[in-house]
Length: 103
Length: 144
Image 1 (cartoon, rainbow over the protein chains, first blue to last red):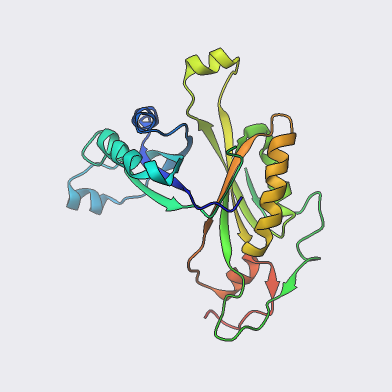
Image 2: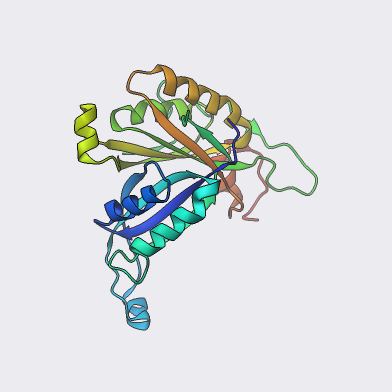
């Protein structure tokens, strides 16, 4: 069960874009994901400085992928819902120590 | 749904509390990991209680949903993809037994299939918080 061959990708995106991200991730080899509703907290000051509008309703999409396809999935997520798109997403991955329930 | 340090079915965490062993040069003898468990919504409480019995003092549950498409759900005869994500802080030395138990329950409980992963903590601030999270006493006095 101790298995470091998987990574968990977290994508924080504007509400309603999880389908778009998931479609892109599937094309890169991901199988499925889980979505949690969330709220962003960026302040007005940051919005003015960076000339962006923060959509407070967010979705956190968690995708567990094998290490080998992590870069491809992250790339696909960035292209489909990166900061320059309407999804205004950020994505990062974390190595997981153990996995249960994948087989 | 948020669950903080309750012990419903199993022995209380206070009964099994351990003393932090003195280790040279280490202020954090127990490593902690974040256990992320994704299960069906109606089984969230069952799994939260199960995890809690492994000396887990802090966990919270967030409502979530899966990403399966409507046509696939229809094909499988499923109505929805409502899930729950349980975030639990667990001591590393408890994880072997806990993951074994979770694996067993995922296979045997009807409608109880799920996925769990662990992510290690790398740092933490506050000894009392650390003692609470690893269910241990005799911590260093003060916030070091």
